[in-house]
Length: 519
Image (cartoon, rainbow, N blue to C red; front, side, top):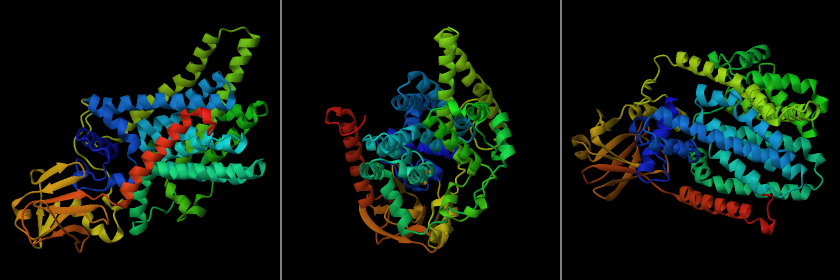
């Protein structure tokens, strides 16, 4: 929560100063010009910042954004399932099952994982595009490409999980594809569109990751529950010690889906099998230790796979509810309105109770942590983020000084206060007697390649790397030092590519007469 509030508030300040391409954290994260927005997607977090501007109370602003995105998620899921099944009732029930699921609530209220929450909102678009390309022979590469782009601009790990899952499904289902050539062409177009429309984030990110050595993000997958505990975690919503689940509704879908498996559609059966397998994989029954220190372990926690379980089970739940709805209406003559209300009570009321439990347990878990006052909703500066995570290995020694705003001037450590800094979007000007009077200053900023420029008295000066990895400035002139973000080929091409690709994608979607894409 603390980490994401810093992200959101920093974005808000950038928007208020009309900066639409934030890369350096100058307003938050201890004002150390940390390049967080290069490593964490920020585009889809912008609505959180906009609601912060509209609603001064930080907690209410975030709550309003969750409501906004939940509504967007309902619309997306409804539209996608309706296009696949041609069934409005099933689409309605599926959307409610998905967005009101426990794991979505956990991401929002318990973990406050804004990125993964956003990734789940957009996942159905990507899977819809993939499904229609592979099995319906439709030209839905736009949906697949832009769907993956929306996920990428939300959360990197969700992007990895979804893309890896789609790759596995492609390999498994390749023999069933009738027109393999056109399917491969469509997927190729989707990949190009995905990369091009995500380039505003991907290019600066890849430039850093491929040109510097960062601490390894692989290791052992942790917080793995045994299968029985995963079932109980789903039923009791305790959530303590990172024990998350799929909720009462998810378990009911698991049981009823098994009972009525033969009556499910072909897609419903496939969704049930994938949902059940990913649920199994989220537990210790799956031998995760075999994947330690491999690229798969980058997901960090096995419970992240529950986002897949939740989506696939939601489709099964929607189909089961539709069959029940249709049976009651046809054979018993029940009112559709009464049936719909009963179904909504069945789906939503247990989740209201579980969400309240999640919120209560979250309050207990956070006891004394952070400076977010629940009585006012106002947030003071607090950082729970490890600066070393995305700091080059050879510059790790600079983290402490950057965090504490400690400059090294003439061999001495000098603590700078906020009064010594003029904060701007993507820039900080250091103006103190110690800074102004020295030709060589190592500032409380971690050195990174390609992204910083320095000036003194309006003239560009040389940037150097200190022995501990701090960013330093050497100049013959004296005076305040301004450190700014330096636009380079990666950022410029990334911005242009994303604008062009999103413009092209939207044009093709709405220009249906050309029949270039199944809209």
